[in-house]
Amino acid sequence: MSTSQEASAASPPPGPSYKKSPSPRSPRSPKSPRSPDSNAPGSPANLEQVIEQTNEQQHVTADQVPFDESDIDSDEGIDNESFVSSTASLTSSMLEYRQLHGRTFQSYKSTEYWGPNDDRQNDGLDIAHHFITLLLGDKLYEAPIDEPKRVLDVGTGTGIWAIDVADAHPAAEVTGFDISPIQPSWVPPNCKFHIDDAQLEWTYPPASFDLIHIRALYGSIADWPKLYGEAFKALEPGGYLENFEFTINLRSDIPSVRDDPKHVFKQWGQVFTEAMDRLGKTAEIGLDGRMKRYMEQAGFEDIVVKDYHLPCGGWSSDPRLRRARRSGRHR
Image 1: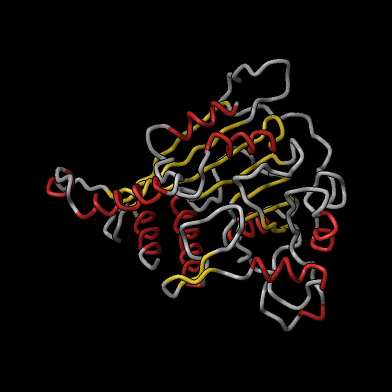
Image 2: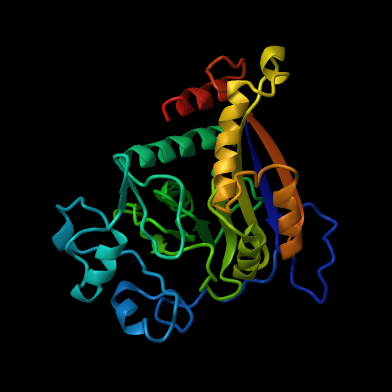
């Protein structure tokens, strides 16, 4: 049985102090103005502006390419000829993936990620999204916000979560960012993607979002308190951060497995944990109360932690878990 942990946290509501709200749900703050458009100072630059701004700011992001009717027959995604010529060098550098043992890996200059970014891996990410949604009771998130207005998906991967949220909430503005440009170009009109590194200082203005979502960044982040701190600054007062992480380790109630410290199940988890520790990016963010502790350090309140147990086969008597695990076996 594998396990995962999810933590939802609220930023403090507006007011003179950060005293914890007596209610498990943070009170809504007054509606704030919408975030600036992409041409406003401090907002992520669109693709046509990136080259012009490189001398003015160290860290830039790129909006998704606008729809162009001339590309209607193209399915090449981000790497298509609709890019303006001034960004050709930027695009080609992002798509010069590293090759290792027949797999491709991202080539973002500021960081490294342990997983491939090829079709095989991306299919696995989409399947994981499916069984996590089943695990959550056919919900995309558990933060108590019915109609989010401005949503950020950190480490969006294939963008499947952001796209589903945009479809489910057409009035919301949904943004996802990742170090690999593997997101589709055909997305809902209220969804966009940036190429960015979550470990750097975020360029979004303060109070830009009312819901920030993080999933499966274990082994990817060198400084989790800093990451939560960036999320805290980007959330509006009363907004929510939700983080879902896997714990890597396999567990069993069978005594021969449970009581054997050298069982292959335990060795498997130890190998991955040690490898990621050597990279300086822990895979154990979901253990020992770290998520809650780091969120509290960042200033979050009303933190709710939930543990999920996912069978490693389709043997569960719970129909929901049985469906979720059968989906996960295809990874």
